[in-house]
Length: 195
Length: 209
Image (cartoon, rainbow over the protein chains, first blue to last red):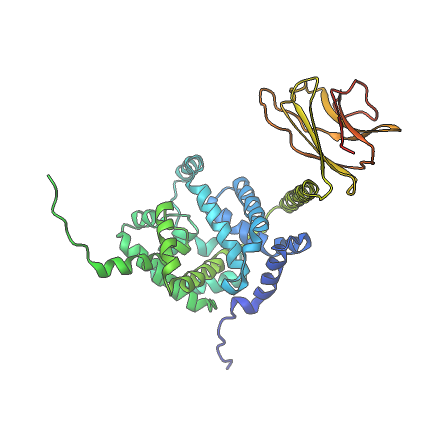
């Protein structure tokens, strides 16, 4: 019988090359930027599209995100976090800013009404591309309590503020804060994230 | 009437910011709370590591929903970056020329209005042209720059469009190919510019010897 191996850590799955590429981008290396694009465009676009639920807007925000990466890459410090997390933080922040801007919110409202379906936490499971990464993440999400999982997915994939999460789930603000933090700790350990 | 002061529980106050680390990492805080948490982060011993771990965890959630964007997006992004980079390179050259040890300055009012200024370096064989208050031209016309030497006038570039109704300066134009003894002239030419001047200069700037 095969022994159960621990999940590979992000750094062991090519994270170190990505750190190197982003460091070169910080020195204005356009070839390195192209290499970085090839590695991060799909996660960046996928995440933004998940939050915005609109392909045209998602392309715009992906473009803005990658230009911000180009402009600010010299601030990336590999000692203080992995390149992928650095890039995804910019992508998520921009997607959330877009969602919360009033005009976009109104458009989204209209779509949500026509679809007559609020964001549902476990849509994550069905829409994810069938990749090893997605399986791994879903396995770890399954290990959370329902409230932890819903709080995290509504906040991260839905772009909800924790107040909106609390309202959507009908629980107290303090409960959402602690469930998000507790759930992230458990996810972090399950995914073997090294930071 | 004033309400009686109720003492706040101190322990909770200390614990409170901490618990927001998760919501912060997921961008689930409003702007004010985000700013307050960042203040806390700067003094908190354990929070930065926790936030980094959460950010890396969130990145994994993002990785799980990866979708390849349309191919055309890559071309647009790379073109944007190339444009940013060449603009930056021109800015750097302009800055270098403006601070060249042999930089010379000539400035004069033009017959059309406004003031034209040239900063030139003979050693770099280049000049930077700027202007303030040049009248806006109809779309069919453009201000063209010339190096004027013994052999006649050689094109030295076009001045970017002046927006009507403003007394703003034009974007600096960097031109290479200055010979010693050249003056710098400006004429009004058909849009796109000419190979040789077709009108009389509105100003000719003579550089100090």
